[in-house]
Amino acid sequence: MIRPNKISSLIKIHLLLFLFLLHGVLFAEDSLESFRKGKNRVSDKQAVYMAKKSVETYIKENRKIGTPSDLSPIFKLPAGVIVTIRKEGTVVGCMGSIAPTQSDFASEIINSAILAASGDYWFPPLQEKDLGKLQFVISVVGKMKKITSSSQLDPVHKGLLVRKGNRSALLLPGEAKTPEWQVYQCKKKAGIPQNERVEMFIFDTVVFQEE
Figure (cartoon, rainbow, N blue to C red):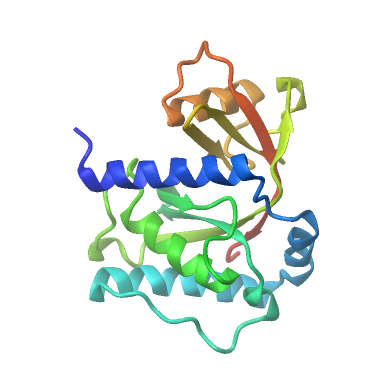
């Protein structure tokens, strides 16, 4: 049985995906290029530090951290962000938004990291004993491009979002090796029967992580 807070998280994510696609609030391609140009070892470390510190503080003290003041300029840009948390190589949380919900990149990281640690309905909330074993990957989500055929899929380099009515789910680039598996997993995550037709959107990401 799904707990109420998990149902709430699921509904929230579906509404965000649906509304952003319905109203065309899509992240501009030239903005994604700004993140490509601004990405370096320093920005990677800063992004990962914020995600890690956000989760640690939330779990230990039940509060959200403030935005650090000495950040690279790209952290002031708006961005749709998805934070993936792995524990010893295995995904234990993945949450965020395909378009900006906060004022800037830094705030998106903080918010999405907390959601990934505590609000992903696929996984139990992380606990203090998990800290120190976690790895963080921050993905800035680019513009959604609607496609009409699975022949246009490129699961290694392009993410996929599928939608049917108010049900939506996505996989990030590289999370599937074949187009068939990418579509199958998106439908499964969204609770859409495999034999039903869906709207499909592909997208690019810029990834921040520590080497």
